[in-house]
Image (cartoon, rainbow, N blue to C red):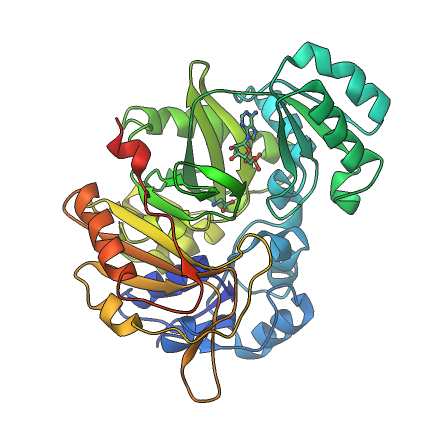
Length: 426
Ligand code: AMP
Ligand code: GLY
């Protein structure tokens, strides 16, 4: 019997998850809620929002999937994994109490400090006067963070005391982030190079997927506003092979154990956003899910039975041999809509998808796309496509990804042209 697997979410990450699962042997019967035009080609899209916990739980109660894989943080923080587990459905993704590692930056700091995980010095405040009074002890620049989920916008790097005070007031006085900014962290600024580590966790054990690096700023040379990520590549050479077991033993596992001590079982992906620099390896943030666009690069390299690895996390039976990694590097270039990360138009016809997919080693993942009434593919988001490729070396992977990007066009399309520049600049 074919396995039945539901992937929850609608972005490039979820398309990559579904694509990777579709390559398992035998291939499972795949569903996506709600999915996009890309997942529609390999899975059946279900008309439920990723955060519609009652609808997803009811569908699972009726259709009994073997596994549900939850992509985004919002349903995890809202308790989708709890609801599915309670209904007897196997789920890959942490319960709400564990997802607070992403949902509350002050909680994540508390856990890191209790577990001795290296991270920037910080203090949490609800009083604007007390937060301002603490600023001098942090020097400049200083980082001001909203506690809760703020769609990637809740972190302000203040170059001057005045900017820091304005950031504190915007969160604590003017409620710019609503409830998410009702508490702020004032944090020491760390120098260095960032990297992402995605760890599969089964409540006790952890297996690290290959390292990667995101490109958060919208423009070449890391300029302009922050985005959800404009590209990624794997491996990130700033993470040396010797570092990986150390990151598992000093970052990932201490968090899993500290949570377990508090009665919280972490199952799913624990994503550590690291800063590697003069102060060693420090954690900037944890996420409770696969990164996007890191997943679109990393999963190009993950071999073996992927569903078995994810199920082992849910079952508490994870082992290293379940995850095999291809030595070929991978690169991902996001093609976005003009205006992103600000306002942008939707509904632009996309052409060249088949030619792009025909480039050797390339796979085009859809982020924000939809089918129009004529059956064509149109833009439906700021990040539209996640064009990935692997190659014999990173140069070939990047060249292939850009060759594929070159085949694609839609009105207002743009992309960064320097993905992996830090690796090439070494
Ligand atoms: P976060 O959501 O905590 O990862 O923050 C978003 C981005 O802000 C990170 O990817 C970093 O580029 C930057 N950032 C966050 N915290 C720090 C810090 N303590 N020092 C330097 N940069 C930081
Ligand atoms: N690419 C960063 C994230 O997924 O949070």
